[in-house]
Image (tube, rainbow over all chains, first blue to last red):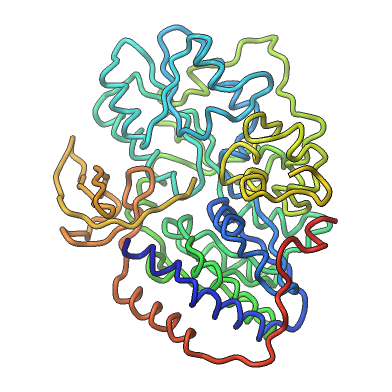
Length: 369
Length: 93
């Protein structure tokens, strides 16, 4: 397929690997932020054919993985109420909450549906006027315009039985939080191409300047990733720290202005908790006041007396999400924790680093395959 | 999650006051919202994410940057460091 297949050419890929090897002289630690990029890097074994000097660590860019347990518990609670329909992207259904996941809520009689687009959830609301349809609005900047459009349409068309349970997070505050965290080793970032298709890269310029790290806006196919890594290595080897754009076919510096206008109309910046990491200031979105009657957090408060959300004690997802540990450093990896029975969210989504390692057959040395 | 798939716009229409279209992905066709790609016409290439065009593919830039990539294939390198295959020790530490 055009704009996909040619970016998977293995001869050019090998040339790029050779070029990286020819130019690198010292060890560098690079982070790809986006889970989609993690998935391709691991599935294709790109991290294993790079020269030993280039180490890739995996970032927090899997929205499913960083959605707080308390919000998953809230979605499960809503699914258990009469006359509600909870809609979500498929990955969210298997993510463990404190005690169960949305699949279990469905098995217990809740109406939980997987949709392809938030506009599909709006259609379900219009088709079911006697029920409240709650769309679990998870995602980064890439997904915010779609969710904003769905709630804006609900507002304009008077669809009062449509609400969003908002779990939107933003990439630049997470990158800054990683850079200031104790023991940070990341020296350069592959910035997420589709996030930047919406936002552009102006927000990354102060990060490059203030922290002295290069960032390269990068696409998702193997050649994109290898070229992004080469561009980062070139900057690091020559002592530069700028924002560069590898993904020129889809990203411009100012981003998508039509999308940003609607996002700004519907959402405002808010502090958000990241699963495994904690609260990061101004790192997410919430609905603006005129859309409060579409806000599922306000419409469906948790009943008092609920036990606070709890996490597995053995899982090291927080360390993995910050790039401080690799998935197979976790004692539960591949044994107590597998994609079928995940303890932590990065094992659930194929884009989570733990699931990417597991599905690619990566194991701790000596562990059963 | 931030998956975006390139496809070609083959139809443009209005639905409930917003600009929608049909996008062809190598033979598979799906409806998509084109509100965030106001400049697209039939025949334009777009990147689709959760049923929304989030970006219009710049075909000239794509051709130019790909030509540069493809040129790498003609370069010759000598004295390349040996690539270690498989899991590296630091991955296991």
